[in-house]
Image (cartoon, rainbow, N blue to C red; front, top):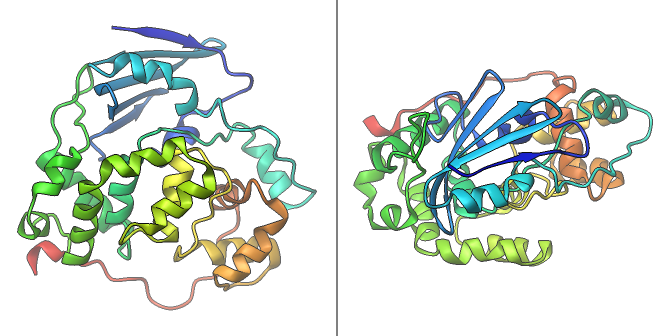
Amino acid sequence: MPARFLRPDGPIALGRALGPLRRGRGDPTHRFEGGEYLRATRTPDGPATIRLAHAGSGIEVEAWGPGARWALEHAPELIGMADPADFDPPPGVLHRLHRRFANLRFCRTRAVFEVVLPTIIEQRVTGKESKQSYRRLVWGYGEPAPGPGGLRLPPAPAVLASLQYEDYHRFGLERRRTETIRFAAQRAARLEEVVSTSRDEAWRRLTAFAGIGPWTAAIALQVALGDPDAVEVGDYHLPNIVAWNLAGEARADDDRMLELLAPFAGHRARAARLLQMGGSPPPKFGPKNAIRDIAHI
């Protein structure tokens, strides 16, 4: 069992850095309890389970499986140690939130398909629906992960590419999202190549994939590449959160959101995440989206 000890140059809260990786409390690929974090992943060297836990002035890391050494090598990026610490907003709501959440770091997983898969499932449905579908898919087609914790690996792209629409339907996925998943799974190797490209090239390649629009691409850049500037254009709630906290406007579109975030170029996604974490919620109007169970249609 390989292990290492990390000494970050500043405080890091594992829950905040790694929270975007977990799709709900029931996500079988992750576990976060009592300050200990377990993650099952597929590395270029094979499956791995990585354990991270605060220990004194640093973070203790252990890993299991064929991909254990790869996981240990990239553990500093995973917890956000490569995230630039030069965000300095002027006095105002973001300045206060930045001080409050000073240890917010953007992780970098280097696992693009593992981010894209659940993000596709989240397209145009409620959070409860998407988490349930992803959880069912992992239990249905992900294998047991190596090491402790009883985790499961995300389904392998080759397995997902071989499935038919009927196989996905029972997990609550309609044909449009099914075809997007199958298309991405068939070209998973090309998706992973964006890790070694520039930010602009990664964006171009991701958005060129059928079914991967700006919203899905931004989340992939944030999580797989650790980009603190990739704004989630197309999000249902985010423009309103940004506009309400930065301009006192209850409703906004993507253009207005980007206009308000422009002064924070380089850290626009960080600014948006801080507002999501600690900003005031905008006024609510109208009914909520209804939850559907596609598997029973």
